[in-house]
Length: 451
Length: 103
Image 1 (cartoon, rainbow over the protein chains, first blue to last red):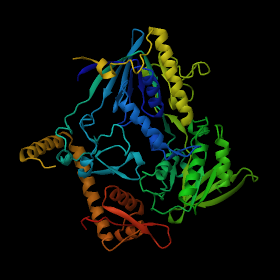
Image 2: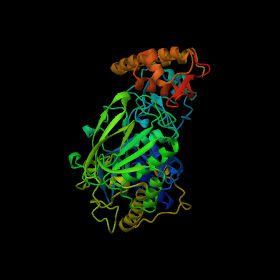
Image 3: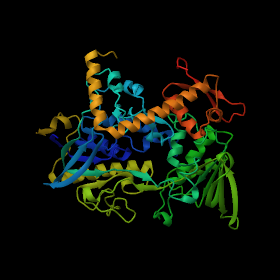
Image 4: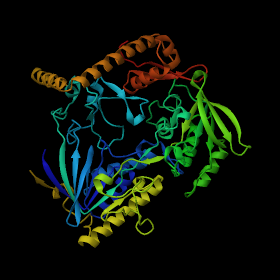
């Protein structure tokens, strides 16, 4: 293992929309940034979405240019397939030990031609499409991945060598690639590790994981996306065009039985958004949203909700008790109608979407020595004055690492984290960012190798 | 890409060494490829007679509809199958073998 050391002003951990925005805001001010992402591509959860609310803009059209800007920015060093393993204090800042995991493909020479992917004989579940489709053991993570380079999945490789034979670039695929550890010396750190959703099978009574046609909101995002697994919204059980789709709200939030007492803040809006998109994609389908109460707190959100109602989406104030599978893998949804004397009824649907909530994606306590709050998201104790500050000076949080929020708020907190980092660096070591124009040395050039 | 005999030999030796290093992974992947290939052969055979929906393919091959859908989606992604239309009731899409695919 080589022992390289990289010198930067800020280390950003997590390459979703929050991490990318923080990196760009700092990089544009002239600060040197290292962005560490554990997967093979930046983009995070957002790049998997179909459209965003309330504007219905294409999510990929917003995310992809930012991904590209990060990749080509002179002041940002992007490290994918990498994880921070250890952080130690160093002068006014920190030294982070980062593990670079082997992808078995040389990112500098891979052209993204996909010849290796075409040649690979192994088809396995594609996690990017939640298993609805396949990917190869030699693959590019998704169509807009950045870096747009292949990865060899060594856990599913048949070791046939077809990928090497098909690759037009000599020595690009390297089965002997080894993990590498580098040290990053930094003045400040931003945690932007994002969220994961409540497991969709957490509530046994809803049958997800057992009944193929009970899915969650992120799965529906893939079905709705133009690059989705089927190219259309089809039922996962049999490829039927769904005729009656139900949404079950608060299926992973505001639920003490799951240990998630908080509201995830995005589920009402993403369900309404998806319902509107479904109404466009499947004009003959009936769409029902079972909800406890609709929370439309953001700018233009209430109007968005009213538009959905005007489009014919049925909103039923009810609590869903149980989902059972009936003939043809259709579903019976047993609901208690809250506004109708708690009457219990059973309604028939052929696809049910659980509006699952948000959980933190990463526990930073062990590596970063910062506190987490009662809800297990990163504690931000000075929220009203310095929203990105954590319990450890010099370490900040951006986006959903600090709590459930939508994309708009994520971008706002990313900007806030960048401002906090800039202020922190200036107050602690007097280092003011060089402007992008003045900066002649890039992150890579400033790096020093210590063998 | 055309490779020389020497290069092919070197790749082959490397893969033999890697298979020895990752015995379980290689075996599991080999089994998976065999199973997938057997299923794809059945699906291609059924599709030879013309466009089919997912339930029709499931009935002809004796497979579960969910598995047929996964394989057809995979075959479509990698160019072996194309979507050609819908059934009479407009409930299901129909799929055909792509041009040039060995039947």
